[in-house]
Structure formats: structure tokens, C-alpha cells
Length: 82
Image (cartoon, rainbow, N blue to C red; front, top):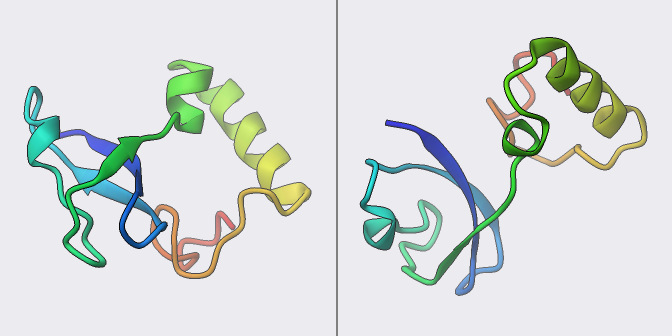
């Protein structure tokens, strides 16, 4: 199942949710269990499948602080990519 990024209309958090293809209407916010989710554009979707472009985009986001969050992202920052 792919991971999609959503913005929850109930708690206003950005969240990542595993969703089966064709079942986006079943997605729920993992934080508040709300169902008012709006799908966001991710860096991966915007940059395509080129791994060099993705790495460059990630470096650009983290170098200016735009991609940093507390506890969010791919693994809460424990992986060292943030």
C-alpha cells in the first residue's frame, strides 16, 4: 500500500497514511481519527522518480528549515535525514 500525505481538517495536522489504491475516502487521521483529509503534494510526487533529484530536494528543504518538523516526516527524525 502506498503512503499518502494529508492535511487533517479536524486537527490541522499534516499526516502520512497508508491507503489502499482506490480507497482514499476510507482514510482517517491517525492523530484524531477524523475523516476530513485533504491530500497534499509530496516532494516525491512533485520531483518524480529520479533519486538524485529527490535527494537534492530533501537537502534544499532541510537546509533552509522548511522541511523540519517535530516528530513528523519519514521516521520522526531518528533516521538522520532531518
